[in-house]
Image (tube, rainbow, N blue to C red; front, top):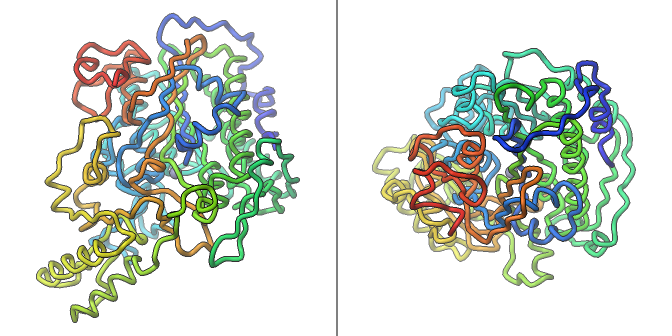
Length: 555
Ligand SMILES: [Zn+2]
């Protein structure tokens, strides 16, 4: 299962590679020359804590630096696009504007009112399902963009399993940005020549996809998790999968270690081809590894499948670090996740979470909307929303007075449901300040406030009770994330550089703290108060004014 592509990249098969050069021993006295930011999609701190003793390669190394296992994607809407938008901007979604993977805009000049977070909806023919990728919705600059402003020789590069991850970690001003589109690695950035790495990688992946893939060999630890779990209202059974794949099965490709191995192989190829970390100015390389998320959604988080995925990921990240070592690049790594995740309720009920259940379909926005308009004697669909929770929008086709009646009725109906923990209106959220206390102390309205951006957020937001999985139709995915609860909010935040002494910490930190910490590491000035995050004094020497009263590493 190890990425054949990676071996090819790392063995210098690319003509443009500089790897014939003898690796220089990096000097680690000054700032690192290459910042590598790895986001592992859906890698909850629960998984990190559980698997850390099993890791022996890359994740073990990165865990031996400044390791915060109480990191937080502090906001309520714990999804991929908002999560990635916090990591390299230093801002909560209330500032990045990325409130969800999808939101509703009833003023848009097209029939599809769902807006994808990383699309340009003004392009003719773009829809939320078949979209034109764009960073247009991201309202704040990223670390790579600020670095390029200060140091014009710096490069801002991303490779990811998902377009939204690559876009949100790099922003508007990029040098290379590549992501898997279901068939190949592509870009929305047309300003630079296509690297040889990409051409070779797409060719190799295309050939690999044409072939049947043998099942993986399990390990004793992963075998201990192999137990068949029947998914309710479904023919599906999860828990004992070994990632065998039929030829041309692209969905099985991405929900397996193959996708991450190939993503890292491309990252390695770009390091060589672009000579990242070898110029006068430091470079930023953002890597988002998406397979853990697809594995979690497809099989849940506590079966043999996730076990094999994470152990393989550990080896793949290890190969990537060894590759950087072999090139003599002076690099530093930050590793985190865009959100956490939760197992399938069917397995959770067997292991001590008796209350785990699937959401009541009656909570779906469309179903609830039609019920309420009938009760109130109104016309139209009533409510718009992406599911059974999160942002909900009142039909703008209704008269203002009827909208008010419907809002009051909807808030009351959701609040009365036994699976609903809280409902907040846009009015309540806009009157709430964004919290500045440690993320462990945030109450529910503060979590929802950090996900609120006027004009994009709903007329109200529905938060489900703990241990309610917001998927009732299990024909596609069986498990998910997206809640306000810590299993979805708490993620590892790890910093490591070769030679760094281990510094594990129990302090509660935020993913918004990563950007200012990395900025301090390379000596990039961030204006005090310009972002939500804080430089972590336990990791680097922070600028005096930022470290002051809000020194996060100490709390
Ligand atoms: Zn995600």
